[in-house]
Image 1 (tube, rainbow, N blue to C red):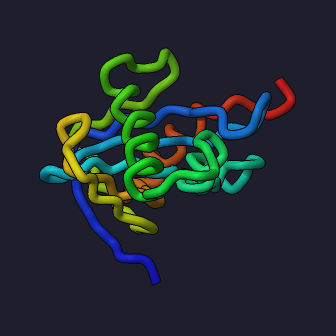
Image 2 (cartoon, helix red, strand yellow):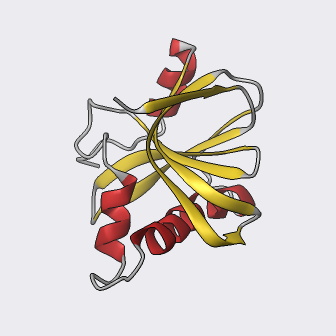
Length: 144
């Protein structure tokens, strides 16, 4: 069973392409202390809507990485942090919305990156069903 964390702070949610051309999932970025949180927001109603960010990182990086935690963790942090400095046009921004994170992997880095010492990767759900619906509405239907 995954470790769970809860919080209620600033969260950015946006769709990203995880399989070219139409495979999208939702990614949430937040911070908790000195750690980044980069997680998928489940959308089981669409293909790839429950993708693993760790697997997505594996597809984007060389297969011969020496330290997966370092390489994959940095790549995943880059995805989340990038949303915070250049927000996508289609995004959901929350400031005090309670959320729960099922932590699938924690990667502590050898040196800080993006103002974080590591990243919790997993699955984030908002406690409020309306917030979940607003997040899922960001996904473009696959056939468009």
